[in-house]
Image 1 (cartoon, rainbow, N blue to C red):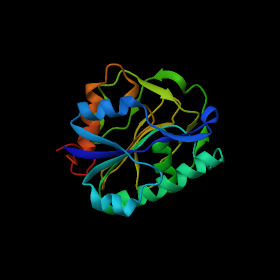
Image 2 (cartoon, one colour):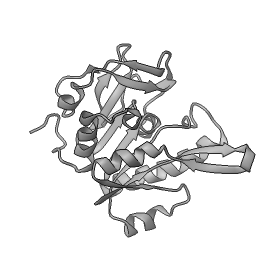
Image 3 (cartoon, rainbow, N blue to C red):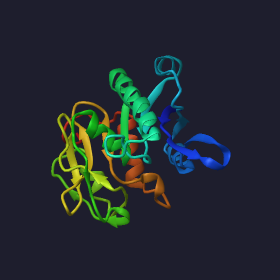
Length: 218
């Protein structure tokens, strides 16, 4: 069974004087149903040793905690620092990278993109406007709507990332790297009940590196 690393959000819990790493339990359930072994990765994990000790199929950068560039605070700084190092290592090792919500914002920021405030995208559902010719089109055109839980969005994806789908207002909702197994999405597949088969197939497609890193499925 292939291992997939899942990054946690960071929360201060005043009642216990603790700073906690938290992952939605639905991530573990979703990945298990997809046939992967989920592993939450601590912010204090030694990244180099981790990649040597475990055969990693991919890394999922999850939601929660705004990036420090839009909301500077101690927790965002802690998470940004670790996730940037983990992203660099994943790209260098050639393992699959999936960014979800904040994770996709991290991808955009990593390659020089800018974030903008958006309205009407928290606790909402909306349709996708697909870009023609992307390899993911057969999966995304099965989506009647996607969930939305973010206050920051992306107008244009920086190279080498390409836009796969937008919201009706023109904000980027999904993106990919045509030459590497890198995928970003602004909605949360783990929050669907039941999980959507099309989203499970799409994520498996990236994690298994089943596509040839071109703009269409062959």
